[in-house]
Image (cartoon, rainbow, N blue to C red; front, side, top):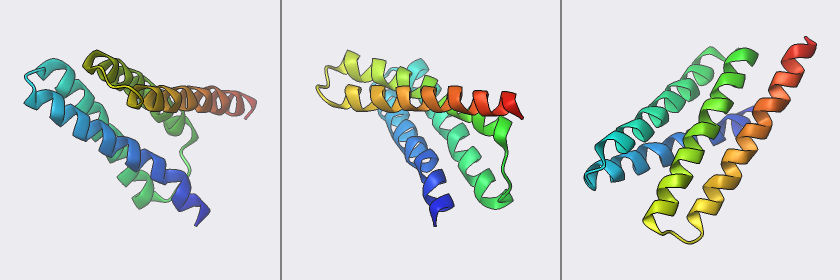
Length: 112
């Protein structure tokens, strides 16, 4: 149960990124929309990969956390540009959390 919950955040981030990317494409911001959507699709593919393989991939997890933090920072920028009030702070905190997770994984990976 704990391992299922640990990977659920990847699915949640993928859904947020894909829907936000689709929204930006609909509002004629094609480049930023496709970029966010592509990042979301990559995270979703990673989520499906870890569910099917059921093996730990420490280095891949390190890169995906860095990838998710960059994607969430980009989404934060988009939310600020749209004038949202609270949502940018939620994605900013999540992006910082993924960045911290990246550094923690890097520290553990260097010790191995």
